[in-house]
Image 1 (spheres, one colour):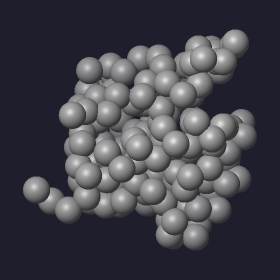
Image 2: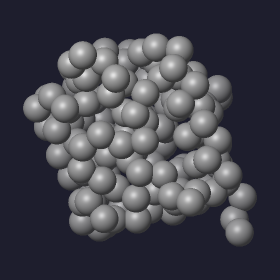
Image 3: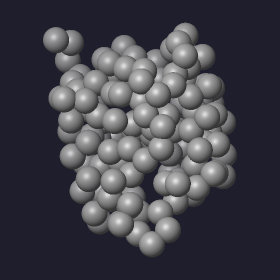
Image 4: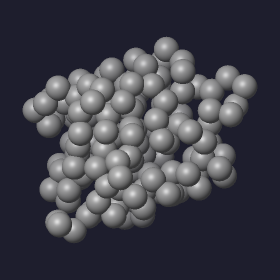
Length: 144
């Protein structure tokens, strides 16, 4: 199977440690983290993705806000540059250990953090990155 992710969630998954907006959100994200850690690939999409699904029942889910679309555009630009590819809807990414390590290093170094400006989780993610990503739930996948 494939995990559908919007561009900025490619950054969020790097530091996800089981904290989130609601218990339902966390349970859903935990399932996605297990899928990614077991080797499922990523399909980049526009708009709400598999992570957003747990929030779409809210009266006004933030997943549709313009600020989130701007965050996606910035993340797509930064990650695309890092991966030397055009990161747009339809792109597929295999999050193998080398790629996760490269993405986490770029994140910790601030190379791919422009999309994180103004995010309520910024300080949490910064601490996780500076602490070496010890408790993250998306783990390195063994090569197949």
